[in-house]
Length: 349
Image (cartoon, rainbow, N blue to C red; front, side, top):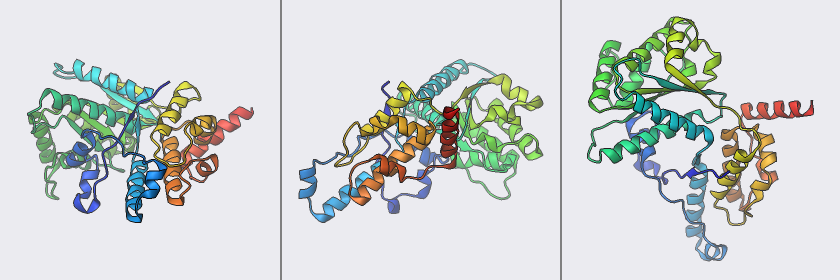
């Protein structure tokens, strides 16, 4: 199965860009993320690379290191399904006065939840820009993350910061909410993405207040709300009176580790096609796709980290190629290693 990859924006000198521009939870960062994607840098033929001066080769190294350091977004079945369902809901909610429906993208860590909802947001933003080419004052998408141990005021402040509204110590939650609702309504916000939803616990008063605040926002802002979090279906967020209200309005899209099969093979092939290494033999990673699945437990995040990390090592060490040994040298996150160990244990039974 062929997968598609979205190339990220080119590198920008850190000294010339405010750090906020790199965070999706700011309007500037989100707009940078949704900006039109460029073509990746060119891999020079070995002879041309060797003929360059030392400083020119250093520049080539840095460009390729930056290319591999950036996350390549692969259009997996989960991403495509999330984008399709999200766009459908936006259309269905277009004339709804109340009780708008939304999505919850839920699954283990490292299974692509954030990628799925941000690609939905990017799709919506670009479509809105195409339909309203002169609407510079529009904010089609709002993206926030729920802070750990969040309070209702903290979540309202996250909305305000994304929109560029001042958040002062003396600002009370009512003022923040009214300001956010006013700006979102005026700027035609059509999609609200709320990530890290698992940071809300309905067993605490603060958590209950946050859930109520999000519900209030969803009633006041004429937009489709999309949530993402770790294993939400197994948390208390969908139980009790408040949970029943969420469960009755939101469709759940589960994310999971990929089984070994055609889609996984396609993911490996697609990521390999993005490599810019002088001596890497095409097809090497495709031949290691079973090993990569065993090593990562089928986690897309771990797969991307392993391949990108090995590519960076290949440039830094001068080997300019990825091998099984170099993949082994890249440590993975605990979740991927645990999933891998569990899969091996199951296979032995």
